[in-house]
Length: 310
Length: 310
Image (cartoon, rainbow over all chains, first blue to last red; front, side, top):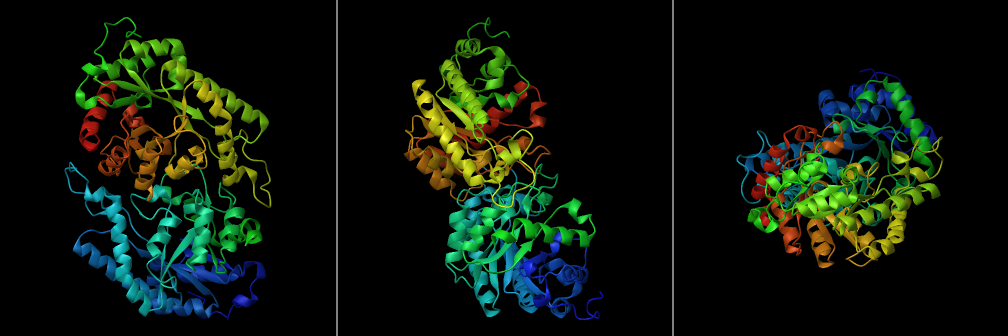
């Protein structure tokens, strides 16, 4: 709203050195328009933002790109592409079309990193739900192995278009709590296996503490992701209990839950990741707080729980 | 209540052949006393029950053993030992004492299979919670790697006593949703790694569909568990959405959620498992139904979704 005409804010170089890698994912300040979120990041001295497509489209993609660039901010990632699990021709065509649009948007915004939430089982996500009655043999709408194969097939479909636009498809493993309805990629190792056929500059992975903190294989897979050059984003927020009524909204500020940020951050640093650290918190209580307070808390918790280990 | 004096019910051999491997885990009929649950299983033609320690202790262990044997039922497993993650001497001693008692109870009840829910992070489970303030470096109360190592150490402590009593310590991977507060064993592969130093007759694993259905490595790990002779129990219930307010109670009847029972049951059968199939459902709505209706539904869903693939 105002930032396009406001005086040029301090550039990233002028930001607090401690925050030189901290990016505000705009999901954390869900109520704000893109312009308002950009202003909040600038006021707090952050050098980068992670964007969501809904707020970008609301602003207009070209205008959003100017708005962020004029504010002197980097775009650390665009959320999100994906939802690739449809089994029918029309669903597949629609998913490919939407993801090609997302690739163009990422390129226009000046980020290479397009985060993919790949979608769930047809039984949980298809319009109208699965066919009834429940079949006697394997139900295609509940067939997790086949659904995961469709994700692999769709990634292969999208890779050439992503390469043309110099955008990376960034696979996000989601917590297994979301395997039925949001993402059939459930571990970092699985994401890396899916990425393996493609160049690391074209298919990458996210390490999001909320989704992967519990994984007994995490240290090894983070090291593998780093060695392969595939870590496209490090996202941090905490696993808080009890789970919210809407499980999607259970995330907390770093330090409010049970994630061992010291260990995971060390693993990510040891893996050679030098990019931005996005804070992405879905939490109604936090969304209800004043945005400047939220961003200040994000920065404070980042300094305490993440930065010392980066 | 009545079964100790009732006429001898049909033996397992007399039960419906279709149900010859179906075991009622008494958590599914939570409101019933042990005697009532045994009666309900017998009335429905089931040959086995999986018992919980609280109901066994309420009845008295010796009496519980007689009651089940007199009804002609097998005890497929005893739930549960575990909660092994304490870091302080008193907590460790208490955990070992309680688990030795559980081993004796299992032996008395005539089952070799003592299911272990191993416990969560001290930050989520210790009385009074973790020490404040949150430390600058790795917080021991949130250190998942160290907590998992303590589980390994306690299993090693308990193995000789388990061997003396011919009882198997059965490690249950819990869904990663419970990694903070219930069990730091989150995958079947991790459970098998923890079991590896010990003979398969002394440390085994549970395959519980609710907890492991999402795992991209599941087929391979089930085959491994079978090849190693470690599958001590196959437990079935469904992953239903939305999650219940108390996430522990989100389980559903087979067929009501998103688990692919055909595939997983085939993998378990291909792994050579020939033991009982326990139905263990934590769900307030099901607990509120008449027990005979619940057991009849369990049997009907078992015939439809599990038995054809066993």
